Length: 323
Image (tube, rainbow, N blue to C red; front, top):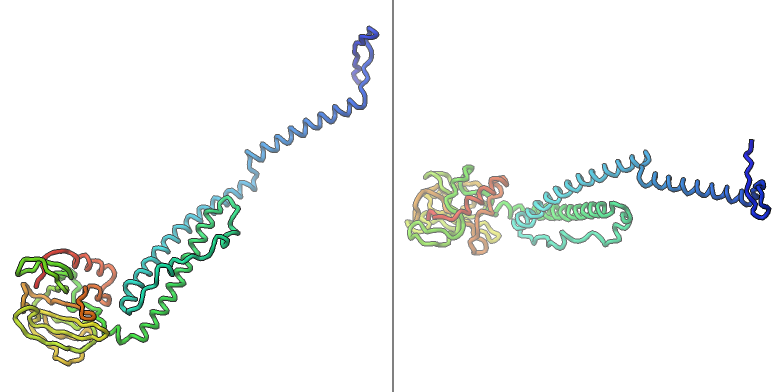
């Protein structure tokens, strides 16, 4: 049963029946609906702001996994970059030096891969910086790999045309020396064993028992065979061509003859203690364009990278030479 409402009329001084107008009813309904709508919108806002839907939760997990994978990719790219650094260093400082070719300039190796517009498609995302950095790093590595590949093609062509040169340039140790501790003294300023003063030692001393074979370190022609009791003692000089010569001193016996053509690995004499020497050894020099240079850079056919590093450490120790 509908509830009847009354109100007190101050004009007539009595209670009269309250009749609500249609307008008031309409306004009341509109007010109720508006309040309901505002409340509903507030609830929806809270839900979307602080509560994730199942799909959103899945997307967040996928984004987290992608960021993790990007991190792994970044580490792998750093490892690839380090490997490329080593290859480029060998290319410029070993292979191209051997082949007498100019190194590739750093500007060419590290040239850019495009302007900022290149990665415009990756802008506007919450992880845009990460994606752009990884993509740019990958593009730079790809460019460096392409340049290095072209460099190897060029070196291969040089090798084909310079096989004779490569066979002639000194490339092994003159004494069989798997025990690297036989290096008595390296190239550089050393204490003279006789005069006890610092002097330039222009070769490398290989200690070995008297009679140990001494080998030609590259193809060439014997230009000097000298027997003496001073200086180098009994020694041999080989002319390899391409500006290179090698000298082998303090032999006990010489096998090579002047004018003889030798091939890398031929025995040219035997270790001794002749001349100005304080113990049996082979004093070995490399001469390029009439200038004596460090022979340690010409053992690349003999040694692994690890053995070569060990040889560098031994030869670099300051001390007293044997001659």
